[in-house]
Length: 257
Image 1 (cartoon, rainbow, N blue to C red):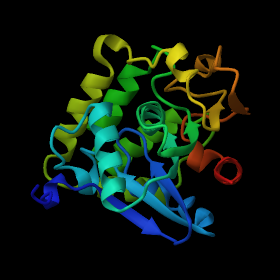
Image 2 (image 1 turned 120 degrees about the horizontal axis):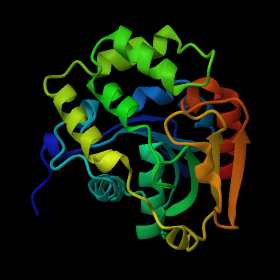
Image 3 (image 1 turned 90 degrees about the horizontal axis):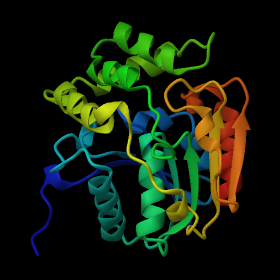
Image 4 (image 1 turned 180 degrees about the vertical axis):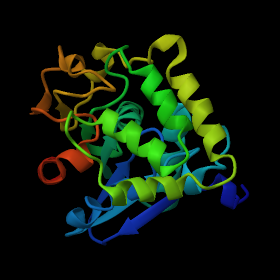
């Protein structure tokens, strides 16, 4: 079998070494840098991989990028190529849906799941906001969308906005994100992972959700499987890594312990 070309490889920013592996999966329209304030706090005794998901930033040219299933296969294949057989998965929004699917499709690989406002837990989604976010190219447009995704009164730090704007500079990035957003929000609804499927997950699962989430409503936390641990972040919106960084870091540490 031939080696994958550069375009067929996923990019991962790696920090730390140790017997434990933690995998960080960003949400739609993000990139590995959204974990820049979280990743360093997880490296004690662990190698921490922050991926660019297929179709995003340095993984922009990954073949057939877009569907969650493609991302699941790509991540599992990349981990296997690195000789990693077990890992803790942390996913935000779309990354949370991908982490959930990894747990379902390869439970022998997933030691735990930490799901931050995960996609796929209900049909409701703020389709208009997601599409505007995917199409945004400059810092002003991105800041407006990010602030709208956050809880009322929260202003997205300029550092986060500038980093995200820079990640969208590659030719074809905007078009790819517009394409992915259209697929995610087809019919103004998102695809769902059935609750009875989620209930089959046997590894530790922690779900973290802000009560003021304007992208994926907090009501999607209803009727979670009994073995899931729910962490409610009162007054927080969708952008949990920025809005509640220390709390999120503490939850990830506890789940991956």
